[in-house]
Length: 581
Image (cartoon, rainbow, N blue to C red):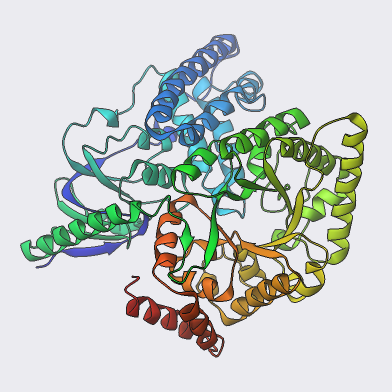
């Protein structure tokens, strides 16, 4: 028997072989405790809650320091977000309120409010936000343990080489993992954008999540082979298969060593065509990581995360400090700041947004900002002030018409006039562009190119809107593909229109970070590529091994194809011939 193969979602690349350690993490709702109390016990329960909050805060602070030292500030921020909940006036005080009003025990108060928040996150359309429910429940478990004076299993105390197998790992679990002993891990649940997956990639620990019921086939002390790239788990393989994967692991590690050399090399083809490689970030602390991975700038700073981590609208000063921090880290490198892309699928508790049947087509992004003018003015003032300290560019999201663009530009000009009258420094010649996410904008690119300074193609939404596919819907997600001929045609139209007008085009969607698509984008003449920092080295490596001429010939062939499968096969064939795989 060659072993049993099961599959999940690979979220952190790497091949590992080792013995299984089953890790049982207790669900905080299953921890035995009283639910109701008498009226004269209320004040005692409130005091217990306050003490548990303080203890949980200190425990998180210790984990944050560990994460900051081992992973950097950006990953420590994941645990800081949990800590921020403990300071949120709508979180712990709400627990005290239900204890007082409903005679709940402290434990029941925690469970009630934590589940309320977790269900709020689970109901959101955005995958990233849905997976924040696990973070809230992780905090709930910590509070319950603190209430009962218990200490959870400490993964940091594992001192033998194992592959961890669990139903789930919380961020506070993952940050404890010592890669010297934890070779890798697999879980029953989880997704690519979970904080556990993000931390695994930062730690360099191969990981597979979302195995579902198949995980029941893995038992304690089984010998396991995992491939964090493909999502494959092989249970108790025979000796020949073990040898095969050991050799594969050695080749992979050699390739990674070679790949590291490309981080700080320019992205230049063999015949001298150079492009700019930038990174997408969501927080100021991610800017440093981007630099470490070889980013030449920030092609997309998603400002909504600043708003989502607050309990009230962030002030101009708070926004200015965050934008200035990113600019300071990047030095003379460009930083493209996207104005607030919120609404519909991304909720803010302090911004009363209507419930919508189809939030992706609704009241969001530029539509919301043009309607709520003061919100937009405050943000533009903060961005312009930050522009005095570096090479800042402004980008408006989800522009669907020239009317929207002109309204946004007019507000920006009014803000510039106001700052000038106040004697506030900013870059008066700051570049202003738009995200191309809506097909109407891609089709009218030639008209837009006369007025904007640059385009940045957001392929994630452009694919969704062009193909009428909700990328979060598992029933139709197989149709979602940035290699669809219609998408490629729209991308070509945008790039060609910008070049005819003497402007430049960037791309900040997932297509920019796809190594398979890189030769195609070289052929299209894409000027600036922005991606998750972890993709930079591989994309640079691919670019360095091709010529622009052969990529243009590839583009010519691709433009004759009619289906996504044909395009993908053509690109795979090109990669195989050029030894790019």
